[in-house]
Each structure stands twice: as C-alpha cells, then as structure tokens.
Image 1 (cartoon, rainbow, N blue to C red):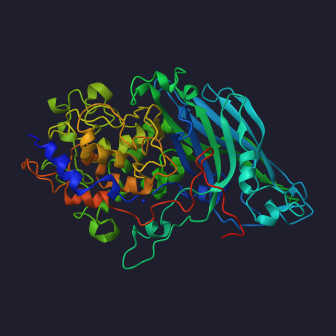
Image 2 (cartoon, one colour):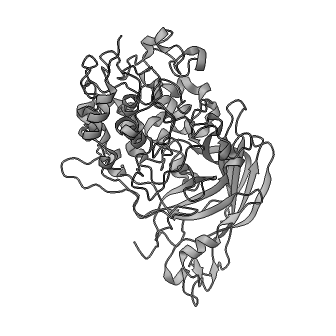
Image 3 (cartoon, rainbow, N blue to C red):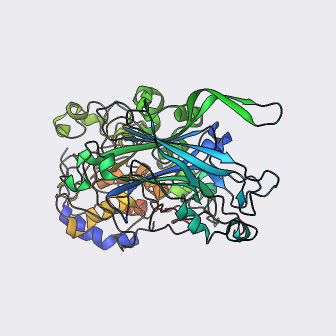
Length: 582
C-alpha cells in the first residue's frame, strides 16, 4: 500500500496540540506476583532499576529491591534480609556469549546481641544485627571471589528513641547518618548499599487489581497502595568500563546509541531444596541444591502478563531459558490479556478506566493489531520489510514469528530483546508516511538473547533530574518531543531528553505502570508511524496527533509520583519510613 503523511504539518499541529508540559506523569513492580513466592516474602523480588547515575555519569547504578509491603511499625519482628537465601544481580553485556557475563551475589548473617529483651534495639545493642558478604563472578557463576565482607546493614527505622537516643538506643546522629555509614566499597571498585529503604514503587494497587479500575471510576478515591511502606534494597554503583564488554569507558562510544554499550540486567533469589524444622524449636536446617524461587527483569512481566497458572514456572526459569519456553510464554506477549480490555470489539467496554487506551485495529487502514490478528505479519518476506529489523535475513524470526501474533513487533521485543536502532523502530519523523522507512533514531538497547531483562544503553546521556524537560514518562516523553518539537525534525542521532528513561533501563522516577499500559494501548506503534485508527492515511493534511493518540498520552492511573523524594546521591533511594512517624 502507499503511505502518505505530511510530517511537517504533523510537527506544527502536534506541537500546538500536545507538548511535554502537558504530559502528566503515572504500573511497576512485582510485589507478591506468584503464588509460591507470595508465601516467602524474604526471597521476593519487588523491583529492579538500572540507570546511568545522574550525579556520576561514568557509572551505572543497579537497584534490586526485595521483601514487599513492609509496615514501618511491624515489630517486634521487623523485616530483614533472609539468611540461607542467595540474592543475586545478573548482567549480560554480550549476546554472543552464553549466560551471565557478570554476577553479584549477596548473602546475609544475623546476630542477636541481646536475646534477653523483646525490643529490637536497646542500650546500644541490636537484635538481628545484620551483615553481608558480597561475591562476584565473571564466568557465569562457575567461580566466585569475595569482594566485600562484613558489610553493614542498617537496622529498621523504628523510632527516635531506638535510633537517636544515646541513653536507651543507638545514639546515631540520624537515620540518614546510618545509611551513609553503611555505604561500602568493594575491593573490585563498586560502591554498595544494602538495607532498608522507602518503597519507590507507586500505583493504586487496589484499583488496578479490581479488574482494572485505575483511575477509579464513579468517584472512587485513588490511593497509592504502597505509600509509606518499606522494602530492602541492594544498590550497586558500577563504573561503565567495568560493565562494557570490552572494558571501554563511555568516552569511547561512537554515538549515544552505540550498540556495544548495551547491557541486560535481571535479579533473582534462590533457596536450598531442603528446609528442616528443628523439633526443639531452635530454628531450621537447610541443605541441598540451590533453586531459584524468584526473578525479575522488566517490571510487571510476571505480575500482569504471565497468567496465574504459569507464574511459579516463570519464577523458576532464567531469562536464558525463555526462548526454549516460547511455546508456553510467547503468546502472553504476542496477544496480551490487557489488550483485550483496550479493544471495543472484545471487552473494552467492560473496563471503563481504560477508555483512553485503544489498540490499533485499522492502522493506516491496513494493519490490525487486535488480539489474534496479524499485525505486520502479512508483510513477512516482502520487499517492504527488506533491510529492516523485520527481515528474516537480519534477525531471523524473532520479530515476525507467526501469524496471529500481532504484538510480536512491539511488546515482545520491548520485554525480550530490546529495541534496535533500525527501521521500523525509529520515530516517524522523516519517514514521509512510511512506517517501515528510516526515521529519527531514539532508542537502541537491543541485546537479542531472547530473555526478559531490563536493558540499558549506557552511552545515552543523563537527563538531569532538576531539568524542566525531565519526565517520568521516559521514552514516551522522548518520543513525543521527537515527533512534535521542530528542533528534532531530522533523522540525525541526537539526544532527546528522557531517552535515558524506561524502557531504556529504568530510573527510580519512571512511571512504568503508565508507560506499560500506554504501550499495550499502542503508543509505541504510533510513535514509529503506525498511527491510531482515527488517522486517515489518504488525507495528507491530517495530523497524526489525533484524538485517540492524545487520549493515550493523557492516560493516568491517578497516582503519578512516589510518596517520598529520592536522594540526589547514591544510593538514591529514600530513607525508610519511621515506625513512629506513619
């Protein structure tokens, strides 16, 4: 078919209709996402973040959070990292090598300094005084070296008498001082914090899981379901040269989208197969092989994409097993359940909160991305896709695997391969109406190992957190700027603010709930020129910034920011909420 679009008009019209200033920032995380792990909170991954450090841009910060929904006043047995659990952060920086290229392992030890009291802290002593050992592997976990011993874990933020009082408590200057004192340096050069923190995830959990009632309808009150709750964070700041596969510093990157600077990150927790309770009441004994019980890469994968019957299996697999299990899991991404509720021909009317999110059923009057439809599959093997990422000669059948798999071209690669700087995955700017043409480069975090990971191109510059251009909408905000701001009306590689945001990594501020729901609703397809259904491809004078696209961009769950400000320096997470302060 012939594609027509006067993009110059679209830039002018789009800039007049919607700008970054009108994008109100709002699903992230895997809190209690599978039946088995819901009963084992100490081993439960809640969130994973990976971003270029805003105040130290020659480094990358990775944050893996565990133990969901901790109440700050949850004594006398406050949450803490578990013993007999291996908490691991995994990094893949080279898709041509099997498995992890770098792995960090944390194990924790607890000591009761005064078992004669029921208080957690008393007279300068701690019960459940926790320390950690940090190990590092550079060969896929075959060998390990200890790089930090006796690392300090701050106690829970119980209250002023326990923390600051020098007569009855610890006598610390402040809880912030305890966090600072707990920051360690590994012998291999990484900066590390392991301990309590505010839960940076924000969303109206009650509304979301009430069959998608977000934003709440009929006057319902929106509520951040994790406001004033804590988690336990493992935070590592790592030099980019240590993560880059050839040991190069970011100054060696050829462009800000250099493919050689892409990493994939995932986190896990493992337990031994046998746990025997001691009949005398003296705890338990662990033995046997170590088994992965939780994993996390992209937010929401297991929580809102994988269905209930497969969630425990998903947690047991590594990302490197995902392709081998594509027959089990692939269709959940090719035809996601959430898309059923964004399609008026199916069940869209049953979820009124998602009314602003409507997947393309007739994009450019030729392409149907509704569940069970063909999307772009009809172009497979044709001259139209020759030389693009959809060409079997370039990436095989990764992105157009089969008929009736419409979201194999957008949702599946976002979660499983990353997005290459190759047509059609470039902004519609400069495409002249053909979504398969070359356009404006704005993302390249392609690491085709087929596994669910958080992928980051480390060469992409940082958007300052205090910049007026900073947006919690991440790549969506970058795409809007690239499509509507005349400054970017070219096909050059140049930095657009928020190109360093989710799903190119994940910053603490990024509103991944909103971004992922918008993506299911077709915003990524629209960004590359597969416009919403109310765009008439035969009308060269119509702006592609149509009502349906504006509805998608303005969608909000109603919770649009975290309940505590993040720190401007490492470990960046906010201090945990105080038990006497909530």
